[in-house]
Amino acid sequence: MASNVGDQVVRNNALTLSSERPAATMSGYVMLLVLLAAIAAGVFGAATVKGDPGLGGVLMTGAVLVFVFTLLGFYMLQPNQAVAVTLFGSYKGTDRTTGLRWVLPWQGRRKISLRANNMISERLKVNDLRGNPIEIAAQVVWRVTDTAQALFDINDYKAFVIVQIEAAVRTIGARYPYDDFEHQEVTLRGNHDQVAAELRTELIARLVTAGITVDECGFTHLAYAQEIAGAMLRRQQAQAVVAARKTLVEGAVGMVEMALDLLSSKGVVELDDERRAAMVSNLMVVLCGERDTQPVVNAGSLYQ
Image (cartoon, rainbow, N blue to C red):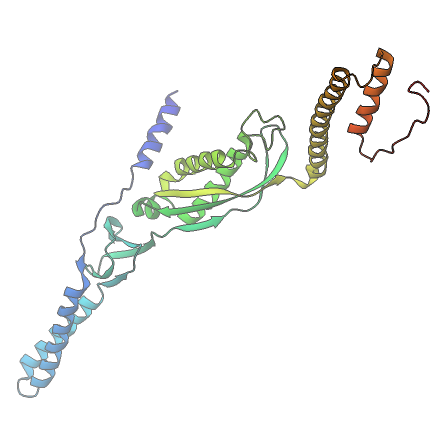
Protein backbone atom coordinates (compact mmCIF):
# COMPACT_ATOMS: atom_id res chain seq x y z
CA MET A 1 0.00 0.00 0.00
CA ALA A 2 2.82 2.40 0.90
CA SER A 3 4.52 1.65 -2.40
CA ASN A 4 1.33 2.43 -4.33
CA VAL A 5 0.94 5.73 -2.49
CA GLY A 6 4.55 6.59 -3.24
CA ASP A 7 4.13 5.80 -6.92
CA GLN A 8 1.03 7.98 -7.03
CA VAL A 9 2.94 10.88 -5.45
CA VAL A 10 5.72 10.46 -8.00
CA ARG A 11 3.20 10.50 -10.84
CA ASN A 12 1.49 13.60 -9.47
CA ASN A 13 4.84 15.36 -9.17
CA ALA A 14 5.66 14.37 -12.74
CA LEU A 15 2.40 15.86 -13.93
CA THR A 16 3.21 19.21 -12.31
CA LEU A 17 6.96 19.22 -13.03
CA SER A 18 6.65 21.65 -15.93
CA SER A 19 3.92 24.11 -16.75
CA GLU A 20 3.88 26.66 -19.52
CA ARG A 21 4.12 30.34 -18.57
CA PRO A 22 4.75 33.52 -20.60
CA ALA A 23 8.36 34.42 -21.31
CA ALA A 24 9.90 37.88 -20.90
CA THR A 25 10.74 38.75 -24.51
CA MET A 26 10.79 41.90 -26.61
CA SER A 27 9.54 42.98 -29.99
CA GLY A 28 12.21 42.41 -32.59
CA TYR A 29 11.21 45.55 -34.49
CA VAL A 30 12.31 47.77 -31.58
CA MET A 31 15.65 46.00 -31.42
CA LEU A 32 15.90 46.34 -35.18
CA LEU A 33 16.09 50.11 -34.65
CA VAL A 34 18.92 49.55 -32.18
CA LEU A 35 20.66 47.44 -34.81
CA LEU A 36 20.32 50.21 -37.38
CA ALA A 37 21.59 52.73 -34.85
CA ALA A 38 24.65 50.55 -34.24
CA ILE A 39 25.29 50.42 -38.00
CA ALA A 40 24.98 54.21 -38.21
CA ALA A 41 27.36 54.62 -35.27
CA GLY A 42 29.85 52.32 -36.95
CA VAL A 43 29.67 54.27 -40.21
CA PHE A 44 30.11 57.54 -38.30
CA GLY A 45 33.08 56.14 -36.40
CA ALA A 46 34.70 54.99 -39.65
CA ALA A 47 34.23 58.48 -41.08
CA THR A 48 35.80 60.19 -38.05
CA VAL A 49 38.65 57.76 -37.42
CA LYS A 50 41.05 59.79 -39.58
CA GLY A 51 40.32 63.08 -37.83
CA ASP A 52 40.03 61.63 -34.32
CA PRO A 53 41.38 58.08 -34.14
CA GLY A 54 40.47 57.66 -30.47
CA LEU A 55 36.83 58.68 -30.81
CA GLY A 56 36.42 56.88 -34.12
CA GLY A 57 37.91 53.67 -32.72
CA VAL A 58 35.66 53.74 -29.67
CA LEU A 59 32.59 54.33 -31.82
CA MET A 60 33.48 51.54 -34.22
CA THR A 61 34.27 49.08 -31.43
CA GLY A 62 31.09 49.91 -29.53
CA ALA A 63 29.02 49.73 -32.72
CA VAL A 64 30.40 46.29 -33.56
CA LEU A 65 29.71 44.97 -30.04
CA VAL A 66 26.17 46.37 -30.02
CA PHE A 67 25.56 45.04 -33.53
CA VAL A 68 26.69 41.50 -32.64
CA PHE A 69 24.86 41.57 -29.30
CA THR A 70 21.61 42.71 -30.91
CA LEU A 71 21.88 40.43 -33.92
CA LEU A 72 22.28 37.26 -31.84
CA GLY A 73 19.01 37.83 -29.99
CA PHE A 74 16.65 37.85 -33.00
CA TYR A 75 14.27 35.03 -33.88
CA MET A 76 11.13 34.71 -35.99
CA LEU A 77 7.82 33.15 -35.04
CA GLN A 78 5.23 32.11 -37.61
CA PRO A 79 1.52 31.62 -36.80
CA ASN A 80 0.93 28.59 -34.55
CA GLN A 81 4.55 28.43 -33.49
CA ALA A 82 6.06 28.97 -30.06
CA VAL A 83 9.53 29.31 -28.55
CA ALA A 84 10.51 27.96 -25.16
CA VAL A 85 13.11 30.24 -23.57
CA THR A 86 15.76 28.78 -21.24
CA LEU A 87 18.59 30.28 -19.25
CA PHE A 88 21.50 27.93 -18.49
CA GLY A 89 19.11 24.96 -18.57
CA SER A 90 16.35 26.62 -16.54
CA TYR A 91 12.97 27.10 -18.19
CA LYS A 92 12.02 30.82 -18.27
CA GLY A 93 8.77 30.74 -20.21
CA THR A 94 7.23 30.40 -23.66
CA ASP A 95 6.73 33.09 -26.29
CA ARG A 96 3.70 32.64 -28.56
CA THR A 97 3.72 36.13 -30.15
CA THR A 98 4.17 35.91 -33.92
CA GLY A 99 6.56 38.07 -35.90
CA LEU A 100 10.12 39.27 -35.26
CA ARG A 101 11.09 38.74 -31.59
CA TRP A 102 14.17 39.31 -29.45
CA VAL A 103 15.64 37.89 -26.23
CA LEU A 104 19.01 38.20 -24.56
CA PRO A 105 21.59 36.36 -26.67
CA TRP A 106 22.64 34.00 -23.86
CA GLN A 107 19.11 32.72 -23.46
CA GLY A 108 18.36 29.47 -25.27
CA ARG A 109 15.44 29.13 -27.67
CA ARG A 110 13.63 25.95 -28.71
CA LYS A 111 10.93 26.22 -31.33
CA ILE A 112 7.88 23.98 -31.25
CA SER A 113 4.90 23.76 -33.58
CA LEU A 114 1.39 24.29 -32.21
CA ARG A 115 -0.29 23.22 -35.44
CA ALA A 116 -2.58 20.23 -35.72
CA ASN A 117 -0.90 16.98 -36.72
CA ASN A 118 -2.74 14.22 -38.57
CA MET A 119 -1.43 10.71 -38.09
CA ILE A 120 -2.62 7.27 -39.18
CA SER A 121 -1.42 4.42 -37.02
CA GLU A 122 -0.10 1.12 -38.29
CA ARG A 123 -2.51 -1.77 -38.73
CA LEU A 124 -2.50 -3.61 -35.44
CA LYS A 125 -3.66 -7.15 -34.78
CA VAL A 126 -5.79 -7.18 -31.63
CA ASN A 127 -8.05 -9.75 -29.97
CA ASP A 128 -11.52 -8.30 -29.48
CA LEU A 129 -13.74 -8.91 -26.44
CA ARG A 130 -14.63 -12.43 -27.66
CA GLY A 131 -11.02 -13.31 -28.43
CA ASN A 132 -11.35 -13.03 -32.21
CA PRO A 133 -8.22 -11.61 -33.89
CA ILE A 134 -8.98 -8.39 -35.77
CA GLU A 135 -6.97 -5.81 -37.68
CA ILE A 136 -7.46 -2.22 -36.61
CA ALA A 137 -5.92 1.17 -37.47
CA ALA A 138 -6.84 4.67 -36.32
CA GLN A 139 -6.52 8.23 -37.60
CA VAL A 140 -5.74 10.83 -34.93
CA VAL A 141 -5.57 14.64 -35.09
CA TRP A 142 -3.44 15.97 -32.21
CA ARG A 143 -1.66 19.19 -31.25
CA VAL A 144 0.56 20.57 -28.50
CA THR A 145 -1.19 22.67 -25.85
CA ASP A 146 1.55 22.96 -23.20
CA THR A 147 5.00 23.55 -24.68
CA ALA A 148 6.82 23.13 -21.37
CA GLN A 149 5.43 19.64 -20.80
CA ALA A 150 6.01 18.59 -24.41
CA LEU A 151 9.65 19.71 -24.41
CA PHE A 152 10.82 19.07 -20.86
CA ASP A 153 8.62 16.31 -19.40
CA ILE A 154 8.90 13.97 -22.40
CA ASN A 155 12.11 12.94 -24.12
CA ASP A 156 10.54 12.82 -27.60
CA TYR A 157 6.91 13.88 -27.61
CA LYS A 158 6.26 12.77 -31.21
CA ALA A 159 7.49 9.24 -30.50
CA PHE A 160 5.48 9.32 -27.28
CA VAL A 161 2.32 10.12 -29.26
CA ILE A 162 2.90 7.18 -31.60
CA VAL A 163 3.35 4.72 -28.72
CA GLN A 164 0.32 5.99 -26.80
CA ILE A 165 -1.92 5.87 -29.88
CA GLU A 166 -0.97 2.23 -30.41
CA ALA A 167 -1.63 1.42 -26.74
CA ALA A 168 -5.02 3.20 -26.75
CA VAL A 169 -6.13 1.46 -29.96
CA ARG A 170 -5.24 -1.92 -28.48
CA THR A 171 -7.15 -1.09 -25.29
CA ILE A 172 -10.32 0.01 -27.09
CA GLY A 173 -10.10 -2.85 -29.59
CA ALA A 174 -10.03 -5.40 -26.76
CA ARG A 175 -12.88 -3.71 -24.88
CA TYR A 176 -15.64 -4.44 -27.43
CA PRO A 177 -16.56 -7.28 -29.80
CA TYR A 178 -16.04 -6.74 -33.50
CA ASP A 179 -19.65 -7.50 -34.35
CA ASP A 180 -22.88 -8.67 -32.73
CA PHE A 181 -25.28 -10.52 -35.00
CA GLU A 182 -28.11 -10.04 -32.53
CA HIS A 183 -27.51 -6.27 -32.24
CA GLN A 184 -27.76 -6.28 -28.45
CA GLU A 185 -24.39 -4.79 -27.43
CA VAL A 186 -21.94 -2.08 -28.43
CA THR A 187 -19.57 -3.26 -31.16
CA LEU A 188 -16.57 -1.84 -32.99
CA ARG A 189 -18.26 -2.11 -36.38
CA GLY A 190 -21.79 -1.11 -35.45
CA ASN A 191 -21.11 1.79 -33.04
CA HIS A 192 -18.30 3.64 -34.74
CA ASP A 193 -19.07 7.11 -33.34
CA GLN A 194 -19.41 5.92 -29.75
CA VAL A 195 -16.22 3.86 -29.89
CA ALA A 196 -14.32 6.72 -31.56
CA ALA A 197 -15.41 9.11 -28.80
CA GLU A 198 -14.18 6.64 -26.19
CA LEU A 199 -10.89 6.29 -28.05
CA ARG A 200 -10.47 10.09 -27.99
CA THR A 201 -11.12 10.17 -24.23
CA GLU A 202 -8.57 7.40 -23.73
CA LEU A 203 -5.96 9.23 -25.81
CA ILE A 204 -6.48 12.56 -24.03
CA ALA A 205 -5.97 10.86 -20.67
CA ARG A 206 -2.77 9.20 -21.93
CA LEU A 207 -1.28 12.30 -23.61
CA VAL A 208 -2.05 14.89 -20.93
CA THR A 209 1.36 14.28 -19.33
CA ALA A 210 2.99 15.46 -22.56
CA GLY A 211 0.89 18.63 -22.88
CA ILE A 212 -0.91 17.24 -25.92
CA THR A 213 -4.62 17.06 -26.71
CA VAL A 214 -6.59 15.16 -29.34
CA ASP A 215 -9.06 17.08 -31.53
CA GLU A 216 -10.60 14.09 -33.29
CA CYS A 217 -9.97 10.45 -34.07
CA GLY A 218 -11.58 7.50 -35.78
CA PHE A 219 -10.88 4.12 -37.32
CA THR A 220 -9.46 3.94 -40.82
CA HIS A 221 -9.28 0.13 -40.98
CA LEU A 222 -11.35 -2.46 -39.16
CA ALA A 223 -11.60 -6.08 -40.27
CA TYR A 224 -11.20 -9.64 -39.10
CA ALA A 225 -7.69 -11.01 -39.32
CA GLN A 226 -6.94 -13.03 -42.44
CA GLU A 227 -6.79 -16.37 -40.62
CA ILE A 228 -10.46 -16.17 -39.59
CA ALA A 229 -11.86 -13.78 -42.22
CA GLY A 230 -13.16 -16.63 -44.41
CA ALA A 231 -14.87 -18.44 -41.53
CA MET A 232 -16.45 -15.21 -40.27
CA LEU A 233 -17.65 -14.37 -43.77
CA ARG A 234 -19.37 -17.75 -44.04
CA ARG A 235 -20.91 -17.18 -40.63
CA GLN A 236 -22.26 -13.80 -41.69
CA GLN A 237 -23.65 -15.33 -44.88
CA ALA A 238 -25.33 -18.10 -42.91
CA GLN A 239 -26.85 -15.57 -40.51
CA ALA A 240 -28.13 -13.53 -43.46
CA VAL A 241 -29.62 -16.64 -45.12
CA VAL A 242 -31.37 -17.66 -41.90
CA ALA A 243 -32.79 -14.17 -41.43
CA ALA A 244 -34.00 -14.06 -45.03
CA ARG A 245 -35.60 -17.50 -44.77
CA LYS A 246 -37.34 -16.52 -41.57
CA THR A 247 -38.84 -13.44 -43.20
CA LEU A 248 -39.82 -15.44 -46.28
CA VAL A 249 -41.56 -18.17 -44.27
CA GLU A 250 -43.44 -15.64 -42.13
CA GLY A 251 -44.69 -13.92 -45.28
CA ALA A 252 -45.64 -17.20 -46.96
CA VAL A 253 -47.65 -18.36 -43.94
CA GLY A 254 -49.54 -15.08 -43.96
CA MET A 255 -50.29 -15.39 -47.67
CA VAL A 256 -51.51 -19.00 -47.33
CA GLU A 257 -53.73 -18.07 -44.42
CA MET A 258 -55.20 -15.18 -46.39
CA ALA A 259 -55.81 -17.38 -49.46
CA LEU A 260 -57.64 -20.06 -47.46
CA ASP A 261 -59.75 -17.47 -45.65
CA LEU A 262 -60.78 -15.85 -48.93
CA LEU A 263 -61.65 -19.18 -50.54
CA SER A 264 -63.79 -20.15 -47.56
CA SER A 265 -65.49 -16.76 -47.07
CA LYS A 266 -66.47 -16.42 -50.75
CA GLY A 267 -67.54 -20.05 -51.13
CA VAL A 268 -65.29 -20.66 -54.10
CA VAL A 269 -64.53 -24.20 -53.03
CA GLU A 270 -65.13 -26.38 -50.01
CA LEU A 271 -62.05 -28.26 -48.80
CA ASP A 272 -61.82 -30.99 -46.25
CA ASP A 273 -58.86 -31.19 -43.88
CA GLU A 274 -56.86 -33.48 -46.15
CA ARG A 275 -57.26 -31.26 -49.24
CA ARG A 276 -56.65 -28.16 -47.14
CA ALA A 277 -53.38 -29.64 -45.93
CA ALA A 278 -52.40 -30.51 -49.52
CA MET A 279 -53.15 -26.98 -50.69
CA VAL A 280 -51.16 -25.48 -47.81
CA SER A 281 -48.23 -27.73 -48.71
CA ASN A 282 -48.38 -26.78 -52.38
CA LEU A 283 -48.68 -23.07 -51.65
CA MET A 284 -45.74 -23.16 -49.21
CA VAL A 285 -43.60 -24.93 -51.82
CA VAL A 286 -44.52 -22.33 -54.44
CA LEU A 287 -43.97 -19.33 -52.17
CA CYS A 288 -40.79 -20.53 -50.48
CA GLY A 289 -39.12 -22.21 -53.42
CA GLU A 290 -36.07 -20.61 -55.04
CA ARG A 291 -37.01 -21.76 -58.58
CA ASP A 292 -39.92 -20.72 -60.76
CA THR A 293 -42.92 -23.02 -60.41
CA GLN A 294 -44.17 -25.17 -63.28
CA PRO A 295 -47.98 -25.17 -63.27
CA VAL A 296 -49.77 -28.49 -63.83
CA VAL A 297 -53.28 -28.40 -65.30
CA ASN A 298 -55.60 -30.99 -63.75
CA ALA A 299 -58.05 -32.08 -66.48
CA GLY A 300 -60.01 -34.36 -64.15
CA SER A 301 -61.82 -33.69 -60.95
CA LEU A 302 -60.38 -32.10 -57.84
CA TYR A 303 -59.78 -35.54 -56.26
CA GLN A 304 -58.04 -37.11 -59.30
